[in-house]
Amino acid sequence: MATNMIPVTILTGFLGSGKTTLLKRILNEKHGMKIAVIENEFGEENIDNEILVQESNEQIIQMSNGCICCTIRGDLARALVDLVAQKQAGKLDFDRVVIETTGLANPGPVAQTFFMDDSIADEYLLDAIITLVDAKHANHQLDEHEVVQRQVGFADRLFITKSDLVDEAALGDLRHRLLHMNPKAAIKVVNFGEADIKEIFDLRGFNLNAKLEIDPDFLAEDEHDHAHHDHDHAHDHDHDHANCDHEHGHCDHEGHDHGHHHHHAHHDDKIKSFVYRSDRPFDPNKLEDFLGGILQIYGERLLRYKGVLYMKGVDRKVVFQGVHQMMGSDLAAKWQPAETRTNKMVFIGIELPQDLIIDGLDACLA
Image (cartoon, rainbow, N blue to C red; front, side, top):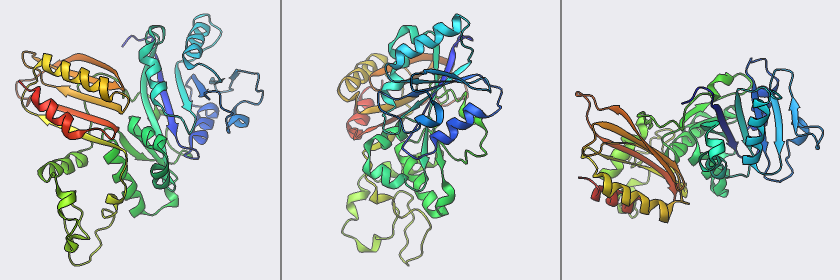
């Protein structure tokens, strides 16, 4: 990465998830960082307006701690280009950008801005999408609003806020649910009154590197799921299994309560994730054709996807990731002699045809 690129963090989360609390801290705390905070309002009247911007005709406010705050009622891309121009002209001084989307916004188009426009891609580096999740209201919000599911699906890191309002079991349930929607995002319970602001920055969630972090618990469950493809249907008629958690493979016939793992079947989230793994190499041409077709047909429903690939005839890891139809790939480090060469990919999307994609990928193996 060019040293002079400006890292950008996209902050998203539903109404009441704590974004304003976090922004107030960023804009007022003595953290020594020069941050430009962009309130991306998509032309809507913003509820948090009076907190951050008193004069509605004023677009940019200097804060006492070196931060600046600007409110956009129009085009994000234009505002980003304008900010860089002012920085280069010496009128504004900032080292990074935080974009807050409105609580009802889908972060997808905001993320896409950083790939579509060369003048933006040359100046800014999309660092990460951070989604705040309100522990108390999350389940209801996820059930009611697809946009909240999208916010979770796009995240590189999930912060659970307001956890003091729920008990441990409910928190465990929520964690498990989020994990199934997005196994590549680290989940952290936070109190923004105390959390270190530095935990929000330089996460490099969009870096194309050979590190594909997927929660190990999810992988363990995933293996179990593959071994029992039809376990969801096979037991529907079987009352002995009423207290089972098939995903974890431990049944409870005596009515003991295993804590927090027995509610998950009730949430049929539209946004789900799955992991593909194989120790056989891909045929590069077949894979390119297949992924191209998948992106064309399902691109809008694919939120994020990422992978480390083992390609036939290539002695280095190939890493790829994308948002919707925009995919990037890169050669990474060489496979080490002691390393097991393997393909690992994660797909997060809306009602994706998992079996079709897995069968298609299998057909691309050399």
